[in-house]
Length: 250
Image 1 (cartoon, rainbow, N blue to C red):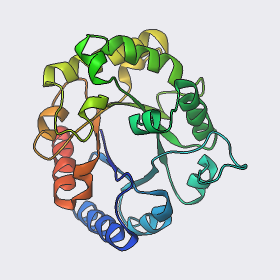
Image 2: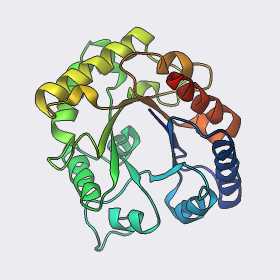
Image 3: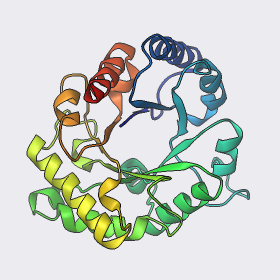
Image 4: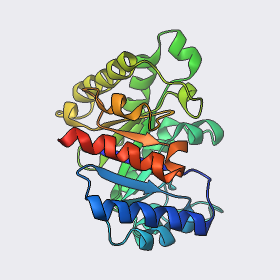
């Protein structure tokens, strides 16, 4: 089970280091059974790496380019991420797909580049509100799965994060039944079309996850972790979510 903190474009260096050090101290004292991953803004990846050095918390990035080097102003490559100590990278977050026009094909190329240097990828998929209301969720997600996961992916280097676009940052989430049914559909499609043992893949849920709803979401049969946005910026709230995940092992 994995709990991911996606800090997005939030936090200056000092406050971010302090947050990471506090979480690392909490983890070192309690030694969680679940995995915890911090994905800070790119410019402080090295700082956060040292802040969590004495803990079992992993370091991840929020994105990477599909080439290893070149004339791409403002981008960062997967090999650069490994160089600063990252073990994971988020690929195809809806904010990248929408705001930067990233297609499924671009997402697949980025994931392949990440796999080539040994990074674990969290590939994000999700539907918009109109698709949700029209009952097109599974159709949309199936298309994204089929075209966003490269041949280099396997059960050891790839996780899927289901994030309904309309739920991100809105304070609203699908019902627990809707979340579990959607995750079950993702697992079935993955097993039948991508990996022979796709039912064993960890499917994370993201979209307004907080300390109040995390326990019930993580209790669902087909949820293998959570991708946390705003709540991950508040240490106490994020730690509460981590403890909810940890309780699933007891």
